[in-house]
Length: 328
Image (tube, rainbow, N blue to C red):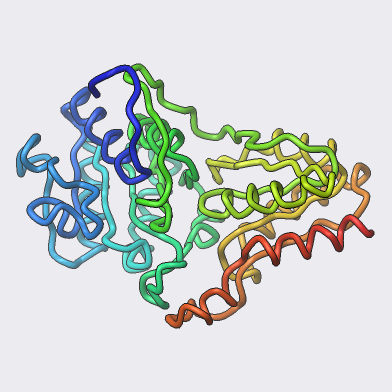
């Protein structure tokens, strides 16, 4: 990276992180659909083929189970593959390889599987049911996996580097709505950000919103609007979902006594439910109201923009739920 500080998009930050880790470690390589000649569905890997060559930027057929399996094998042999799914929805085709092989190898025979599986996720882009998934809850209960879901440019850069260096299989979800809509700065000497550490995005006293990824920006918008009324909302950005920074979650719950967990996923069986359960179990006597969730509807993601708006959480829905808890 040239210069002291550089303003980049969310997408550029991930590309820069891949570039820097590939420069630093010759065992790092990329594999996935259309990532080489085409540069990826969102052009995130554009330029990497020219820089690192076809042996380290590998185009594959549309066969997720096959190329994830190949990546697992190469990781077991000492390489550090970074797998790209064209859309994260297609990760379902590799569920067996990820959950039953990558996630269990260390338990079975002490074998490290240092690999990253990444791709564009999330809605608000009229991607409909096949191009809008947030599958974190599916994998949260699978032992042996780590899950990262950044919401800022700085975290996207620092966390992708840490994910690549980790000796465990890491799922790295990238909300596509953020790709070119947010900007930030990363410095030439920016350090990797440790996995498993939440970030206090906004301090407050009246209620805590626990969230991550694109919903971070919804939470911050709601907090800004309520601050005008003298209501101070604390916003905790999880950044890493697994391992969960339980210490930070419980600290904010005990501080404010009221908690809303905000996530972009169907509510039933959600990751939000896991966070809410931990707060209820371990911070119950500090709470002044029940733990609440603001999630999506329990339906497939609609294609129609008005219907998708109804399906997704937004600042208005969050504020309404916050007001309910503040009255409790």
